[in-house]
Length: 327
Ligand SMILES: [Zn+2]
Image (cartoon, rainbow, N blue to C red):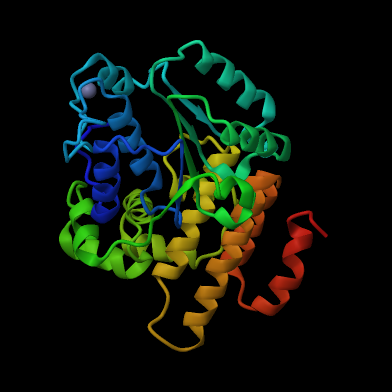
């Protein structure tokens, strides 16, 4: 990944830049906002800046959000292998476990003295013992460690964790910055404008939807797939994701999210079909969340196919919990 990837969220970056320049670095940030809005990208840019050995963090210089891209630290990050960066993500339905958190803190303690960064993504998937352990750590944070908590559902975090973080709320991008971000991808401008109308100012969601359109052979082809009978729900993964037939939990969850965006993108301009599309997208979001937390990926895909092909949403709402195995 390049260091100069366009992210948008200029005001947030400038604000954090100024703070970093003055060496006012919080020990924990909570990057909160909808999925596909750029939280992960911001976390990466913050990490690069904090760890770059030539970045003017703490020198009062503005523009610290630009790591040099050349020092050994920047190169180690670019190769995906930097000992001062630790990332925690959920393991299947178990979430982020306390043992993983403890092991990570132990390995970070071997590098005391250096600045170190911990990315927790998504933070709402911390299992309860891990969340309590993190809270204790944040109460007495180790010197030099910066925690970046990423969350699209911050309401699910412990309020005591939230209160110990500097919260960075990331809203949807306006049209101009959205177009600037997408201009770095091979998407023509009229499609970019359509994507903005389709998913709002969430560039990551727009790119996911565009990739699904390309994979299916264009906007109309994807629309056809969404509105045709689905023979095997497992085929839906290939519609949305290029994962070579893999259907692990994260892939299936991302597939369902993209299909939810697609259903909403293809909503009619008005009439009952518009509200039906909204409800289907909402139901798919619930299915994606269920799959992420504990649900069977096969049942999740079957439920997704049911939602896509449903004409009677009232009956579907009654059937869906049983189909997901939660009733
Ligand atoms: Zn550097």
